Structures are given as structure tokens and as C-alpha cells.
Amino acid sequence: MGQTLGCIQVDQSNVAVKEQFGKFQEVLEPGCHCLPWCFGYQLAGTLSLRLQQLNVRCETKTKDNVFVNVVASIQYRALSDKASDAFYKLSNTKEQIQAYVFYVIRASVPKMDLDSTFEQKDEIAKAVENELEKVA
Image (cartoon, rainbow, N blue to C red; front, top):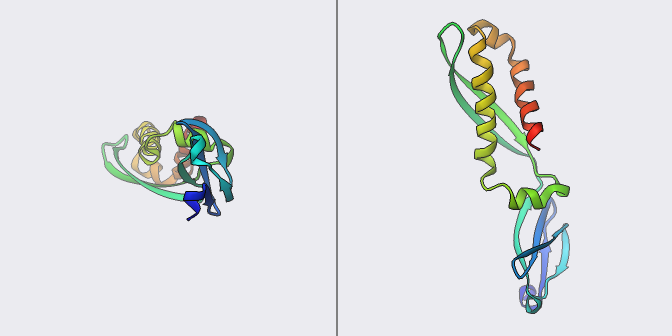
């Protein structure tokens, strides 16, 4: 019934993208909002602001020619002030994050011996974090 009257509800920990005739208008915060469809307003979609986890498995070779499987657990979330960028500019968030993680791991691990790879896992994690912060 709410959709026919033009009222929508945005749940907690989510934001919604409002468009008018296909053009971005604003990001709607949690709560009740009026979207009169007769004036061309519509809900383009919603975006979760919850913390999510992505496990990335990458096979690479160390300096001493040993193949290792590196598993990185990446925790990420969309920021409400950049919700329109996250909704319109990113097509597949998980694959894009995974590509950056692969790039950093495949650039870092081949420079290390097997033993130093385990010892320097914090440096690898910091390199991944720095690369992902550059993109954000």
C-alpha cells in the first residue's frame, strides 16, 4: 500500500538512492520517505552500510620457488557520505577489491623467502590496507 501512495521505508544500516526520471537526486537515510511516482521519483536501489567480509585466496610463488596459497580476509563497508559513488561507480565491488588484493600480494610475496613470508604477514596486510585506502 505504501508504494502506491509513494511512501517507502529505508531500513536501519541501509541507505537508498532516489532518482527523478532516471537522474540521481539524493541518498535517503533510514526512515520513512515520500517518493511521489507521478512526479517521476523512484527508488534506484539500496546499499548496505554493514561491515562485510571478503575472503581472497591467491596462489603465488615465493623468492625460493615455493608455491603458497595466501588467504586474506578483507573487511569492508560502504560509507554513507560516499553512497552515491558506491552505487553508481562500482559495478562489482567484491571483484574489484579482489583484484587490488591480488595485485598487492603478487607484488609482495615473490620478493620474500618462504620463512620471511610467514614472519612478515603484518607488512603484507599493511600493504593491502594502504592500496585499498588509495582507492577509497
